[in-house]
Amino acid sequence: IRLGNDSAIEKLCRAGVYFQVNPDFRESFITRRKGMRLIKDGYGVVLGSDSHNMRSRRPQIDEAISYIRKKSDDEIFGRFMNTDIFDK
Image 1 (cartoon, one colour):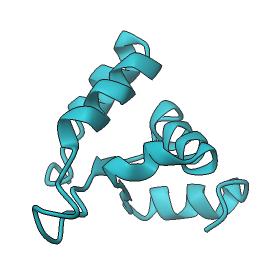
Image 2 (cartoon, rainbow, N blue to C red):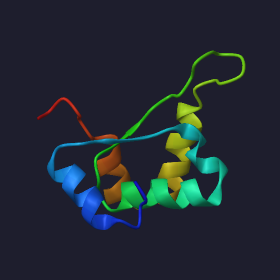
Image 3 (tube, rainbow, N blue to C red):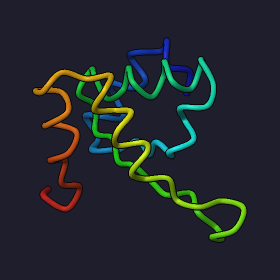
Image 4 (spheres, one colour):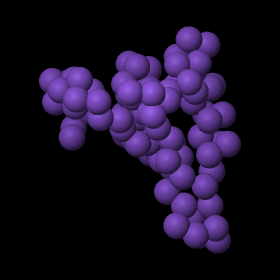
């Protein structure tokens, strides 16, 4: 899905779909912008580890949470941290 296609994203959200953002979303301008837009716009976003092994792809969850905290206000960060995908 292209992030610019809001109607498709809205339809997926209404259907209860959550989006996974991996910690390495911070590594490029485009993925940073898209990931933070999903979070700031209040879409269901979960932070995945994308860690297939601990040597070359360590989780980086703490770094991603710190980044999201730095780029968000208290309300947005609180909403992101309190997302419960099992509360449906």
